Amino acid sequence: MKCIDFDKQFERYTTAWVKANAEKYKNNMDVIESMMPDVYMEFLSKPAPWLDGKTPESYFEQYDDAKALVSWMVEYMKQDVPVPDLLMERITELGDEAEAALLALLDDASASDEAQMTAISLLRELESEAPMQRYIDFIAALEAPDEKGDLCAEALISMGEGVVAPVLDALAGATQAARDVFADILSNFPGDERIFELMMERFAHAQDRRALFASYLAKLGDERALDALYAAAQDVDVNYLDYVEIVNAIDALGGDRPPEREFAGDPYYESLKRV
Image (cartoon, rainbow, N blue to C red):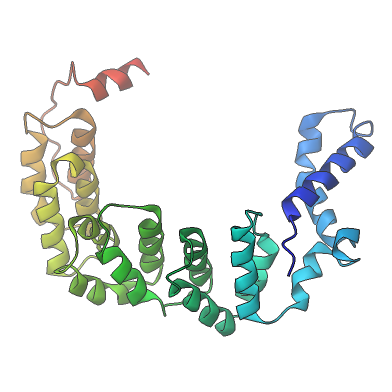
């Protein structure tokens, strides 16, 4: 299957359209730019010689083999040709067959990160929960945060409360980087004592990320965090940005705002003051 550059073809179509219509719109580029969504729809619906007379919007509809379409998508990436949105839309239209093909791509150790991250995004569009444990296992082994881990986390959050138990089970054997990603996920699902304990532990020990974990404590909505937040707000070493987020968390939990502090000389404070 040939990897056709749809983006380049649309660029050519747009160039020709602007040339043909510039006088009509008096070379007003703001008006011409506002017309681009309509031009794109026109591009999609016109038979194209570079597609043997098929329209761009119908081109991928002639294929219904999900495995072949996923392989085609991967070939686009290998050839460094932009993957057409129309191809990915066709893949997700095939539902369960597409899910199976995308799961196989996730399990392919030779697949690129780009291919696997695209598979994660498409599986999320399919609202698939089948890769839940795959995502958890990948995050649990992280030595440092990365984009693929973040994408897995977003997918897990979208699956809802069903992820809580397996994520909690994975905490014991997870790296510290993984525990922080898991904390991000779990902060969306208050109610389990182990989640609160994790957030309190990370807030106490992750000194360089106190603002982040203060925001997680605010999301959990547990007033027991207030004492630790008050203590952090009065810490002589707290920087201005962390202080602001800590106070925001105190407000969110219904606590009284701590006394105002002076932050003259703090680089974050001075930078914001200049702005």
